[in-house]
Image (cartoon, rainbow, N blue to C red):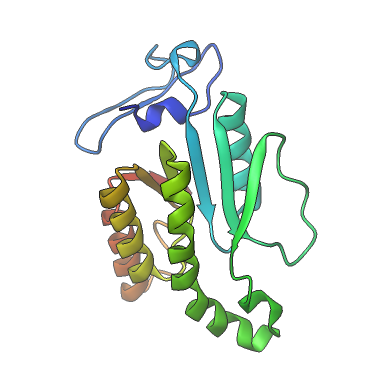
Length: 193
């Protein structure tokens, strides 16, 4: 089984090896997992709300440049966005009903629609069988944590979570507990500031 390391972007001078959480991470430039050795993988990047499209696009473009088949699953943009990078397939699978509603009702409707959108994603994941799933945000923390753990266990697909707000800007005890629960729910977590 290929590791998540096969999907990290690199050029001829850098590489990064990522293993299971109990193992180690080698430094950039250590010579492990060179680009020439990395096989093509199907990778699904999931950003339900589409709030980090520049990040999503940069990650997806780097994965495509490495020869991977990348699909970004997100919501349709409500404002004009640049097109997705060449080679990145975009699927608008979240909030198709809620985003048609006026601003006041949209947030509640998104919360109600989100679990159904996750369940609707399952057949595509079963059919496509990606080698890796990269989740950007957990809009409904508890629901998302249960869903992604179930997907990983049932389908055997490694799921990586990016903790964009690992230490919340306005840290309350509740927000810190939520961030910790989110991070602990995944065997692979990327943290950045």
